[in-house]
Image 1: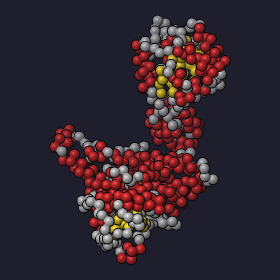
Image 2: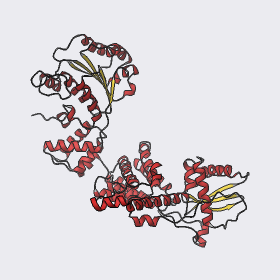
Image 3: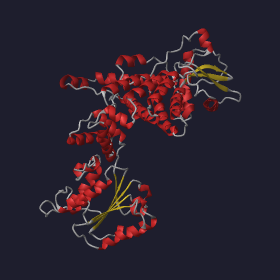
Image 4: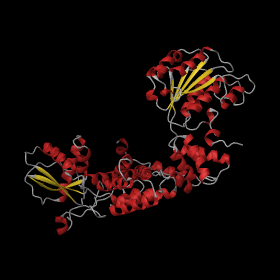
Length: 567
């Protein structure tokens, strides 16, 4: 017997068999049950998500006569009457499919419309299905407008397109439009598991998740890839073989790269990229997997919920969440996402991958010096005299997933913010804590007023005030990129205008290790609010009674301070 590919063999034949399009099924089902039928339907969405399938099921619903031949319009076609079997076989004379991609001219459309004057031969309704309708010419659209608006009572139009923006509004206004959604990877993987179970084929859950992600929302693509995976694996679908077939990147490669970036090890980043080149690991696939991992890290940091596929991956995500601060995760995600577009522009995609990762290092909280893999050294005056005794050691922002002891350790006492100090001849030997308070209060005031934007805001938040004199102020920042002339000059302009200083006042920025910056204070304040919220919930008598009497537990990561929730 001739083999039938999975995408055709398991094409849904009823609305109940459709996966991931519940909103469309519900709307059409209600319309069919109440006999409130429109004369034209437009189904939109990407490839392989069920537009043509919905059209055929709708045609069967309109023409089904039931097993006994006495049935009427229904949302559950029987599949055994002459009309249902003929539509499934593609030989129902009253159901016509026109591929507008290859039949896009006015002559083809007029030939189709000439059939509209004749009543159905076999069924209850004639159904004209035009696929990729946006490919029709303007003349063809104009030719069908009148019939589309006022068809005979026995005629139904079903249009499908992957690009509804190209369909004229005169056509859109005459149709009921349904947007079919791309399917989630988990939904695809669950359906593949049912299909392979019915086929009696062994499949690993991790392999199905890889196929679900590779399908990018298309069930047809997922089933086609599954056919390929079965052939590649010799009758079984295993994760290692699917990964090799898809050219997917192993999670360990991406984790190692992110750990090197978190540690500021440029030499390790270059070494890992060279090793990936030798193994033939794709640069584009690396950045794609990196965005997926960073998404999981961000979800864990902000909610405490695991978004990883398994326990091993979840452990790696938690380790990265402890190494990377939330701001850095967001920046890395953006760089990886936009870096994929740069790969095709570079003569060597691995060189482009290296540059994307080194760019991430240049924005790190403690930027590595060029040519080395360590953290930027302290400024000369601190190297000679030792660290200032007044400075507070920088603390990373704790994540909700850390134990309470770690959260408590990350919260450092801070003095109340003082109002901005006017520019007066004050010596550079002013107390570091006083300078930090004054700088934090000034940055908060300017930020609330909307005066700080983009890199200027980051420079202000990531810096500390080390000297304040009549002729100018001196900041220290860990990032050499933020300390460049562009952000410095724009921040100088904002400060000069706010303080009302005369010409000649300057702002200088030195690169070095920092402590007690506004960003660190914000992180400590967030950690303190989070800890206070957790302690308040745990001490609540109602919560304690639920835990004692009913065995209730507090979901990890579900506690959020009220002010953070509002933000």
